[in-house]
Length: 195
Image (cartoon, rainbow, N blue to C red):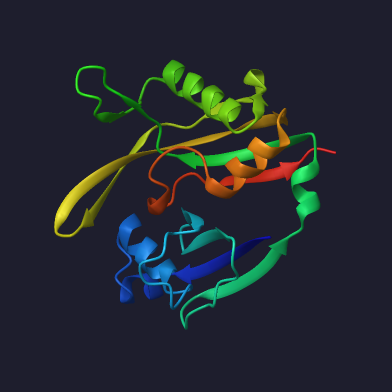
């Protein structure tokens, strides 16, 4: 079973909690899953800056226990939700590729390569991307600090229509997320069934 939480947090609350980057948000969300030190992360999240506040969506395999901050709404996702043939989707991703020379992961910025990346990831998740519906947002550099060192991810918003071809791979992709840097708020596949 999957659980979906929506958290609304004012800019003032976020500043008081020192939520300045994706790594700080990741650490704060862990607090909704207490008693799991050393365990592997089993949740995905997406952070959206809505001007006056932040909205965080959290997809998890266990129900979160909301800490004292923010307004939380938690609901289960019925298994029937993942049984449709086609979906409109939104995805905030960190598209990367491996450089041939040293196998180092590097960000993708060119739109044609971003489109190809999304088509490959959809296929891996058991879906066929309807190319004519795909909208690719501009790549945005997002910096973060972890253990005193600065890092960077590239955030790209994708939206369009997916048609499910392999139900098991689709369900796995939904639960595990799409692409890299999932611990930093990337990879959560937002879906709306097309009936």
